[in-house]
Length: 150
Image (cartoon, rainbow, N blue to C red; front, side, top):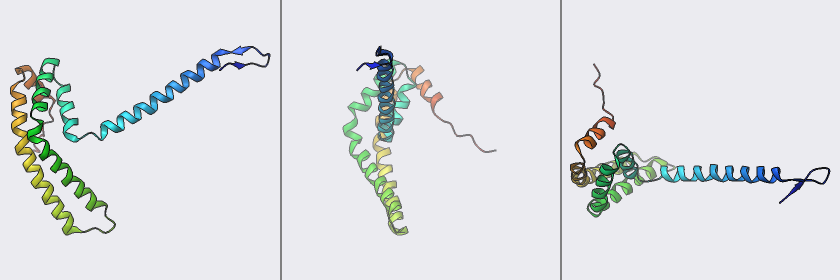
């Protein structure tokens, strides 16, 4: 597309500017889309991404390999935990609040959490066992440490 000025001369810079502006808007919209998709990733995947970001390439790959290989062992527990969390959300968003149903949903979530932690902790220990000493130190240093109130 070519724009013309009042004298009939082409103004290509307007077309180029329009193209650049459109590319900018595509980048902004694409970035927002990707950010929202990442926010919806399962919490475990976000935590694991954060963990591996603290490691060098070799340790990160070793860690991810164990997590991927062992996924069949904890996948069902992870799904049950997500389902229990959705039930809590459903209870809290119901038009009428039902305290008993919410308590039941929370107890089911707690049971699902305990099963997941019991299942996933062995996988996590195996993954950490594959890290170098420097990699294990990096994880310790990156983890938030609660400070005791004195």
